[in-house]
Length: 250
Image (tube, rainbow, N blue to C red):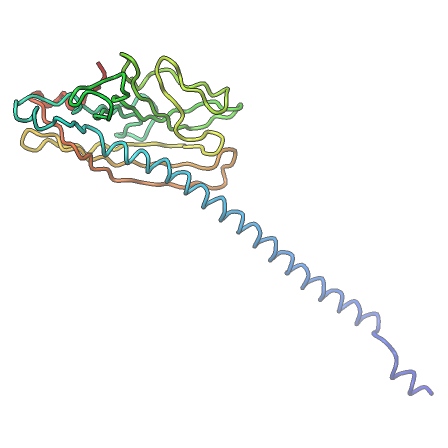
């Protein structure tokens, strides 16, 4: 009788405590792993989204600057020994940027529906890109802005800012500066243009390095940097070579 009782007896209290402790350890490890995986996946999604936002903005900047100086009648001006009205490109460091770099560029190029070979402000042929720190919804956010000329008004790096109290952001009606990056999604902490222009046999060859650092708006956990090397396709010929680095605005 006693032998049968011993055969059907359960776990002792000590055995149950050891089993519970082992189960808790395994459960804690599983929960920690699951939490870590979810966090890692969330950070990956945010990182991918941030990189895509920065690349989209940089791609537009790159395409624009490569077109700078395009003139449908460029050969006519070159043959006459005169400078094309589209040849000038201004770099400005009005804003705080790393030493030796610039945060604003003003340029121009010939566009459809205008008069070929003539710089037409009413056709948006003078354009600009700049970085500025703005207050959006009570937070300080770095924004990439762009502008194009309108009427008889050109583009200036110190022009008034867009209206960030509205969404979509309204362009400034006088300076024509608009938001290029979305301040509700992207905080651009740095936009720097390095000037590698050089004069070769009386022609200014234009090479620019552009870097952009940013994070998602409202979050400082993740930051990414994108870079672009830009060879401006149109070199600048001007009897006064210093004119190549001035504002093309009238």
